[in-house]
Length: 340
Image 1 (cartoon, rainbow, N blue to C red):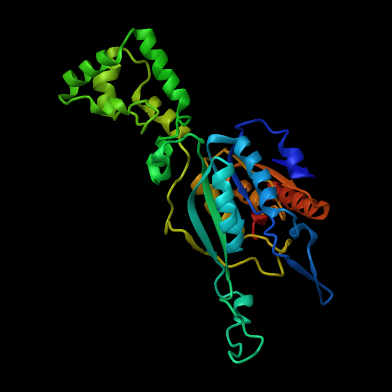
Image 2 (cartoon, one colour):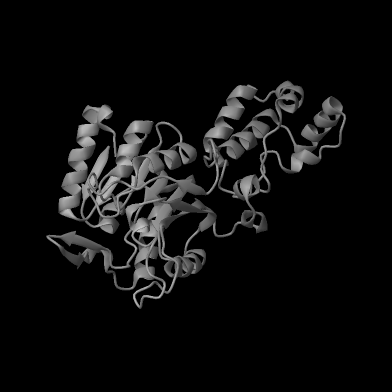
């Protein structure tokens, strides 16, 4: 676990390129979040940011740099108008491609109850729908020159990223050279062994619509030609290079999880550990590295401890940093304390 207190941009610039598997972070929403103290409300200074869109692109650009080619990014927001602006600028100015728009439904929370019976004739009645959810945006790290298939979903999105699977492609090219094989040699062997025209060779180990052979094809065509990997080893390397997305129970983009109670809350915008654990399990492998550049109360770090991931957390506010550090150190010593 690595914890840093200070300006996130200065700190992140010291991180190596392509060193993080997952970014899961909760930046300021710039909506003027308030905190109550002794009966009075005050706007938190950390939630008032000039040039918010440019500021957001600055940290997203650093996340783009430190994420691995198969890395995944999630960040939270709850202002739809800002999300609309952000998505336009993210598409123009970064390599991130939106994969999913997820909704955290806070359910029958206290704030929702306070509006249930408001007099519709009252002059203080709302002029819009009262919001009891927040939004989590899910991105893959795509290359700027990705072809049209990258705009699709699922495997087409992953398999048309030329940089994905690069070590496997380089190994395959080196094996062909070592064995003195041409594409025609492999095509001839394929037709002899499989009895079909070798159309799939346009995709095996290629930049466009990348695939690896099936076990039958690998053991019938490639291994007799002298390729050195057993199929299990080939498959294992392939899986390790793919962006992670492991479906779980009730796998959809609406998440029904109650918010952290005000009694237990260490931060105004604290997210439930249960919710963060789910994202981490779906979008990273055990032992992977997760970065939260707006650590707040340290909930992402708590979720990493409980799921067996390495954690890097950055928090600018000294008070929140000390609270998060104490919380995470205590959890590392005694994981049974995981209750928030």
